[in-house]
Every structure is written in C-alpha cells, then in structure tokens.
Image 1: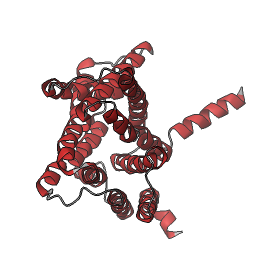
Image 2: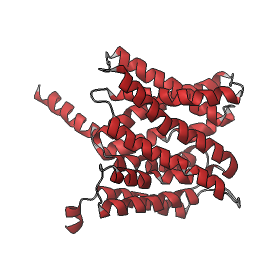
Image 3: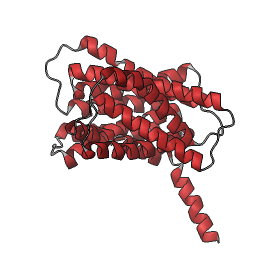
Image 4: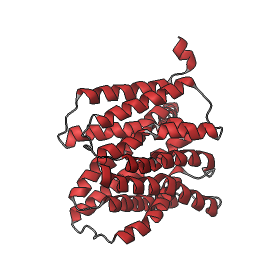
Length: 305
C-alpha cells in the first residue's frame, strides 16, 4: 500500500504547487478570450456572454458541492462573501470593460488587465498582509512591462482620444485588486473551494441580472450558440474551482499574476485558431513576462547565490 499512498501524496503536492496553479488558472480563465470571439459570431452580446456562463457555472459548482455533502457552518457569512466577491471580481470588472471596449476597442481596453498585480500589492501592503520586498516589487513591475508590450504588440485601437474612457477603465484593475485582497481576508473558514467559487459566480451573475434584463437584447436561438455557452460554462467552472484553491495556497500578489498567463493564453489562441501571427515584439513581451514571474518567485538567498 505504500506506493499508492506515496503517489497520492506526490499528486497532492503537485496540486498545491503555486506555479502550476498560476498557469492552470490563467489558461482556464483565458479560454474566455477565444470563446468570446466565437460567441460574437454566434450572435451573443458581450453582456450576455458574461452573464450566462457565470450563472451556469455557478449553479454547476454549487450543485456539485451539494452532492458532495459540502455545507457551510453558517449560511449568512457565505452569502455575504459571495455577493461582495461577485460584485468586485465579476460584475464591476466585466461591466466597465464592456462599456469601455465599445469606445476604444479590445486591445486598448485589455491593457488595464496588466495593472491588478500593482494595485493588489498596494492594497495588500496597506492592510498589512504583504510586506515591502524589493525583488517582488521589481518582478511585478517587470511583469507589468511585459504584459503591456504583449498588448501593444497586437492591433492598436487606432488614433482615438481615449483619455476619459481609459480613466473609467481604471475601475477594472482597482476592483479586481480589491476583490483579491477581500477574498483573502474574509474567505469563510472550512468552506470547500468549489462552493466558494460557485457562490462568487452566482453573486456576480445576480449583480449583472438587472443589466441583462435592461439590455433587452434577443437571446441567441441556434443550438450551436448555446453549445458555446455550455462549453464556456465548463471552462469557467473548472477555472474558478482552481482559482479558489490557488488563492488558498498563495498570497494575493502572487495570485494576481495569473492575469499575465491569461494574456499569453489569448495570444497563443490567436495563433492556433484565428490565423494570427507571432511578431518579434510579442516574443519579446512573453520573455519579459516570464522574467517577471521568475523575479517574484526568486528568494533573496537565491539571488545572492
């Protein structure tokens, strides 16, 4: 019996490895980038594509937790946590992004998703759950530069005077960073990650429901359109299940770096599925991102070795 026990222990260790969880979270949640392009072809609006996968995957995760017998010790703290986390991490970022994206374009808007690590570091430092570490700050800044290069190496928004809209877009990384710190500080103890992930997604979909109803847009009716939603529900459910497990084993600043992997996932999906080309600046940007992640993971003792 030793071999299976040792294998299971080794598997659990791999499952708790922050770097692997960072990559898995970024890739799974990054699936929304190529899927959103498919959804647009199938007739879904950006708001509808944000609402339905959040609702469907949230219901699936909560139902799975219920079948597994997971029950929170107290209901109200979990409901409160789910609603606040859903508003900060799902509803506000998505709503602001959709508004700004219609004005300045996808590439320019996506630049704001390189900023959450810096805001997360600032907020976490301010509340005392992160101390000043020069190497970590340097890694975050290097990763930020790489992510900015990655976005700028793709098609530009093209000559728009977008200052006011980009100022509004800053609400997105600020809200994401606040959500990262809030979840770490207020995560209900003893509640399974799948239930927390499902609750946050349902909280976000509940906050988006009035906007979805007010939009009055027609639902897509083709079976293929709903297949896109079902596929994204699967990616979202698995992605946020890993997302919450990742946050349990990582500090907020390290956790926030999955956005860099998410950006890289979008570029690779464009290469593989949408006939995009990898330019020299994009290769440089990916190398800078990898260097930033390496700096964040580098311990001071290793730097002197």
